[in-house]
Length: 262
Image (cartoon, rainbow, N blue to C red; front, side, top):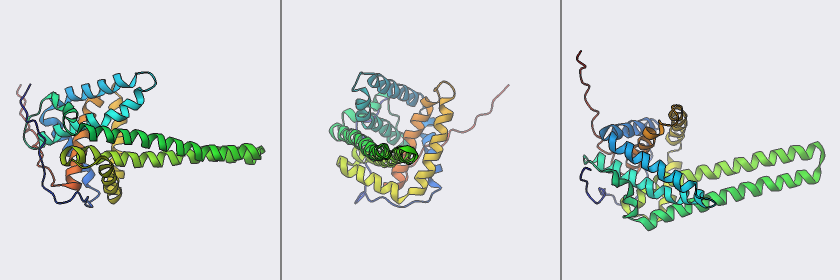
Protein backbone atom coordinates (compact mmCIF):
# COMPACT_ATOMS: atom_id res chain seq x y z
CA UNK A 1 0.00 0.00 0.00
CA UNK A 2 1.41 3.41 -0.88
CA UNK A 3 2.32 5.86 1.83
CA UNK A 4 0.11 8.88 2.38
CA UNK A 5 -0.04 11.73 4.80
CA UNK A 6 -2.34 11.50 7.79
CA UNK A 7 -3.94 14.91 7.40
CA UNK A 8 -5.91 16.34 4.51
CA UNK A 9 -4.51 19.41 2.77
CA UNK A 10 -5.70 22.70 4.18
CA UNK A 11 -6.78 25.70 2.12
CA UNK A 12 -6.53 29.27 3.28
CA UNK A 13 -9.72 31.31 3.30
CA UNK A 14 -11.28 34.01 5.39
CA UNK A 15 -14.87 32.90 5.30
CA UNK A 16 -16.68 30.00 3.62
CA UNK A 17 -18.65 32.26 1.31
CA UNK A 18 -19.77 30.44 -1.86
CA UNK A 19 -19.19 32.25 -5.15
CA UNK A 20 -21.27 32.31 -8.28
CA UNK A 21 -19.77 30.47 -11.20
CA UNK A 22 -20.53 30.02 -14.88
CA UNK A 23 -22.88 27.25 -15.89
CA UNK A 24 -20.26 25.59 -18.09
CA UNK A 25 -18.13 24.78 -15.07
CA UNK A 26 -20.23 21.68 -14.44
CA UNK A 27 -18.47 20.06 -17.40
CA UNK A 28 -15.12 21.00 -15.82
CA UNK A 29 -16.20 19.26 -12.59
CA UNK A 30 -16.85 15.97 -14.34
CA UNK A 31 -13.65 16.32 -16.37
CA UNK A 32 -11.78 16.99 -13.13
CA UNK A 33 -13.32 13.93 -11.52
CA UNK A 34 -12.25 11.80 -14.47
CA UNK A 35 -8.66 13.09 -14.37
CA UNK A 36 -8.44 12.43 -10.64
CA UNK A 37 -9.70 8.90 -11.23
CA UNK A 38 -7.19 8.26 -14.01
CA UNK A 39 -4.33 9.42 -11.75
CA UNK A 40 -4.75 6.41 -9.41
CA UNK A 41 -7.42 4.13 -10.92
CA UNK A 42 -6.40 1.08 -8.89
CA UNK A 43 -6.88 2.84 -5.55
CA UNK A 44 -10.16 4.38 -6.67
CA UNK A 45 -11.60 1.07 -7.88
CA UNK A 46 -10.77 -0.61 -4.58
CA UNK A 47 -12.27 2.27 -2.61
CA UNK A 48 -15.37 2.24 -4.79
CA UNK A 49 -15.85 -1.49 -4.30
CA UNK A 50 -15.45 -1.14 -0.52
CA UNK A 51 -17.75 1.89 -0.44
CA UNK A 52 -20.59 0.09 -2.21
CA UNK A 53 -20.04 -3.21 -0.40
CA UNK A 54 -20.18 -1.55 3.04
CA UNK A 55 -23.33 0.42 2.25
CA UNK A 56 -24.97 -2.68 0.75
CA UNK A 57 -24.06 -4.83 3.76
CA UNK A 58 -25.38 -2.22 6.17
CA UNK A 59 -28.49 -1.65 4.08
CA UNK A 60 -29.69 -5.25 4.33
CA UNK A 61 -29.80 -5.12 8.13
CA UNK A 62 -33.50 -5.59 9.02
CA UNK A 63 -35.54 -2.54 10.05
CA UNK A 64 -32.68 -0.08 10.60
CA UNK A 65 -30.39 -0.78 7.65
CA UNK A 66 -31.75 1.99 5.43
CA UNK A 67 -31.37 4.53 8.23
CA UNK A 68 -27.79 3.49 8.98
CA UNK A 69 -26.93 3.87 5.29
CA UNK A 70 -28.08 7.50 5.32
CA UNK A 71 -26.10 8.23 8.48
CA UNK A 72 -22.95 6.45 7.28
CA UNK A 73 -22.97 7.95 3.79
CA UNK A 74 -21.30 11.30 4.69
CA UNK A 75 -18.59 9.52 6.71
CA UNK A 76 -17.57 7.27 3.81
CA UNK A 77 -18.01 10.08 1.29
CA UNK A 78 -15.52 12.15 3.29
CA UNK A 79 -12.92 9.43 2.73
CA UNK A 80 -13.32 9.62 -1.04
CA UNK A 81 -13.21 13.42 -0.92
CA UNK A 82 -9.99 13.23 1.08
CA UNK A 83 -8.56 10.86 -1.54
CA UNK A 84 -9.49 13.37 -4.24
CA UNK A 85 -7.82 16.19 -2.31
CA UNK A 86 -4.63 14.18 -1.77
CA UNK A 87 -4.53 13.21 -5.44
CA UNK A 88 -5.08 16.79 -6.58
CA UNK A 89 -2.20 17.84 -4.34
CA UNK A 90 0.12 15.41 -6.10
CA UNK A 91 0.20 12.74 -3.41
CA UNK A 92 -0.75 9.08 -3.76
CA UNK A 93 -3.18 8.05 -1.01
CA UNK A 94 -3.88 4.44 -0.15
CA UNK A 95 -7.14 2.51 -0.03
CA UNK A 96 -7.37 3.10 3.74
CA UNK A 97 -8.04 6.76 2.98
CA UNK A 98 -11.69 5.75 2.54
CA UNK A 99 -11.95 5.58 6.34
CA UNK A 100 -10.39 8.97 7.12
CA UNK A 101 -13.86 10.17 8.15
CA UNK A 102 -13.78 7.74 11.08
CA UNK A 103 -10.63 9.43 12.40
CA UNK A 104 -11.21 13.08 11.52
CA UNK A 105 -14.34 14.96 12.55
CA UNK A 106 -16.23 11.67 12.85
CA UNK A 107 -18.79 13.15 15.24
CA UNK A 108 -19.66 16.06 12.97
CA UNK A 109 -19.78 13.86 9.89
CA UNK A 110 -22.13 11.49 11.70
CA UNK A 111 -24.29 14.47 12.68
CA UNK A 112 -24.51 15.45 9.01
CA UNK A 113 -25.79 11.93 8.35
CA UNK A 114 -28.26 12.12 11.22
CA UNK A 115 -29.62 15.46 9.98
CA UNK A 116 -29.85 13.95 6.49
CA UNK A 117 -31.88 11.06 7.93
CA UNK A 118 -34.14 13.36 9.93
CA UNK A 119 -34.62 15.59 6.91
CA UNK A 120 -35.65 12.59 4.81
CA UNK A 121 -38.15 11.48 7.44
CA UNK A 122 -39.54 15.01 7.67
CA UNK A 123 -39.85 15.25 3.88
CA UNK A 124 -41.75 11.96 3.82
CA UNK A 125 -44.03 13.09 6.65
CA UNK A 126 -44.83 16.44 5.03
CA UNK A 127 -45.46 14.78 1.66
CA UNK A 128 -47.75 12.22 3.30
CA UNK A 129 -49.66 14.90 5.20
CA UNK A 130 -50.19 17.02 2.09
CA UNK A 131 -51.26 14.07 -0.03
CA UNK A 132 -53.25 12.42 2.75
CA UNK A 133 -55.28 15.52 3.59
CA UNK A 134 -56.28 15.94 -0.06
CA UNK A 135 -57.11 12.24 -0.33
CA UNK A 136 -59.27 12.43 2.80
CA UNK A 137 -61.12 15.44 1.41
CA UNK A 138 -61.70 13.56 -1.83
CA UNK A 139 -63.03 10.57 0.08
CA UNK A 140 -65.48 12.80 1.92
CA UNK A 141 -66.68 14.43 -1.30
CA UNK A 142 -67.02 11.12 -3.14
CA UNK A 143 -67.94 10.62 -6.80
CA UNK A 144 -65.79 11.91 -9.68
CA UNK A 145 -64.85 15.19 -8.02
CA UNK A 146 -63.59 13.29 -5.02
CA UNK A 147 -61.60 10.89 -7.17
CA UNK A 148 -59.94 13.78 -8.98
CA UNK A 149 -59.07 15.50 -5.72
CA UNK A 150 -57.67 12.27 -4.29
CA UNK A 151 -55.47 11.72 -7.34
CA UNK A 152 -54.37 15.34 -7.29
CA UNK A 153 -53.48 15.01 -3.63
CA UNK A 154 -51.25 12.03 -4.32
CA UNK A 155 -49.49 13.94 -7.10
CA UNK A 156 -49.13 17.04 -4.93
CA UNK A 157 -47.79 15.04 -2.00
CA UNK A 158 -45.23 13.36 -4.26
CA UNK A 159 -44.20 16.72 -5.70
CA UNK A 160 -43.72 18.23 -2.23
CA UNK A 161 -41.63 15.23 -1.19
CA UNK A 162 -39.43 15.53 -4.30
CA UNK A 163 -38.82 19.25 -3.75
CA UNK A 164 -37.82 18.67 -0.14
CA UNK A 165 -35.58 15.76 -1.15
CA UNK A 166 -33.81 17.95 -3.71
CA UNK A 167 -33.12 20.46 -0.94
CA UNK A 168 -31.65 17.60 1.12
CA UNK A 169 -29.37 16.62 -1.77
CA UNK A 170 -28.22 20.23 -2.02
CA UNK A 171 -27.53 20.25 1.72
CA UNK A 172 -25.43 17.09 1.40
CA UNK A 173 -23.44 18.08 -1.69
CA UNK A 174 -20.80 20.24 0.02
CA UNK A 175 -21.42 19.45 3.70
CA UNK A 176 -18.87 16.60 4.10
CA UNK A 177 -16.18 18.71 2.40
CA UNK A 178 -16.88 21.71 4.63
CA UNK A 179 -16.77 19.53 7.75
CA UNK A 180 -13.69 17.54 6.74
CA UNK A 181 -11.46 20.25 5.35
CA UNK A 182 -12.53 23.25 7.42
CA UNK A 183 -14.26 21.86 10.51
CA UNK A 184 -17.53 23.69 9.82
CA UNK A 185 -20.35 22.72 12.21
CA UNK A 186 -22.80 20.20 10.68
CA UNK A 187 -25.91 22.38 10.37
CA UNK A 188 -23.87 25.37 9.20
CA UNK A 189 -22.16 23.16 6.61
CA UNK A 190 -25.51 21.98 5.31
CA UNK A 191 -26.86 25.53 5.23
CA UNK A 192 -23.83 26.75 3.30
CA UNK A 193 -24.18 23.84 0.90
CA UNK A 194 -27.80 24.75 0.13
CA UNK A 195 -26.83 28.40 -0.30
CA UNK A 196 -24.05 27.47 -2.70
CA UNK A 197 -26.35 25.29 -4.81
CA UNK A 198 -29.06 27.95 -4.96
CA UNK A 199 -26.53 30.61 -5.97
CA UNK A 200 -25.41 28.33 -8.78
CA UNK A 201 -28.70 26.69 -9.62
CA UNK A 202 -28.07 26.43 -13.37
CA UNK A 203 -24.70 24.59 -13.26
CA UNK A 204 -26.04 22.27 -10.57
CA UNK A 205 -29.21 21.57 -12.56
CA UNK A 206 -27.06 20.72 -15.60
CA UNK A 207 -24.85 18.58 -13.38
CA UNK A 208 -27.90 16.69 -12.11
CA UNK A 209 -29.03 15.96 -15.68
CA UNK A 210 -25.57 14.71 -16.69
CA UNK A 211 -25.28 12.51 -13.60
CA UNK A 212 -28.75 11.07 -14.23
CA UNK A 213 -27.70 10.01 -17.74
CA UNK A 214 -24.32 8.70 -16.54
CA UNK A 215 -25.92 6.62 -13.79
CA UNK A 216 -28.21 4.91 -16.29
CA UNK A 217 -25.26 4.24 -18.59
CA UNK A 218 -23.17 2.93 -15.69
CA UNK A 219 -25.93 0.51 -14.73
CA UNK A 220 -26.09 -1.09 -18.19
CA UNK A 221 -23.09 -3.46 -17.86
CA UNK A 222 -24.59 -5.25 -14.83
CA UNK A 223 -23.95 -2.16 -12.73
CA UNK A 224 -20.17 -2.54 -13.04
CA UNK A 225 -19.89 0.97 -14.44
CA UNK A 226 -20.72 2.28 -10.98
CA UNK A 227 -17.26 1.18 -9.83
CA UNK A 228 -15.90 3.93 -12.06
CA UNK A 229 -18.73 6.44 -11.77
CA UNK A 230 -18.67 6.56 -7.95
CA UNK A 231 -15.05 7.80 -7.72
CA UNK A 232 -15.55 10.10 -10.72
CA UNK A 233 -18.53 11.63 -8.90
CA UNK A 234 -16.42 12.00 -5.74
CA UNK A 235 -13.76 13.79 -7.73
CA UNK A 236 -16.40 15.98 -9.37
CA UNK A 237 -17.83 16.92 -5.96
CA UNK A 238 -14.35 17.83 -4.71
CA UNK A 239 -13.61 19.85 -7.87
CA UNK A 240 -16.93 21.71 -7.57
CA UNK A 241 -16.18 22.37 -3.89
CA UNK A 242 -12.84 23.95 -4.75
CA UNK A 243 -14.47 25.90 -7.57
CA UNK A 244 -17.25 27.34 -5.42
CA UNK A 245 -15.58 27.69 -2.02
CA UNK A 246 -11.81 27.72 -2.56
CA UNK A 247 -9.07 27.93 -5.11
CA UNK A 248 -9.63 25.81 -8.18
CA UNK A 249 -7.54 22.67 -7.64
CA UNK A 250 -4.41 21.88 -9.59
CA UNK A 251 -5.58 18.62 -11.11
CA UNK A 252 -3.08 16.05 -12.35
CA UNK A 253 -2.27 16.21 -16.01
CA UNK A 254 -3.91 13.63 -18.25
CA UNK A 255 -1.51 10.75 -18.99
CA UNK A 256 0.30 11.22 -22.34
CA UNK A 257 -0.81 9.07 -25.22
CA UNK A 258 1.52 6.18 -25.97
CA UNK A 259 2.22 4.81 -29.41
CA UNK A 260 1.12 1.23 -29.90
CA UNK A 261 3.76 -0.79 -31.69
CA UNK A 262 2.93 -3.81 -33.76
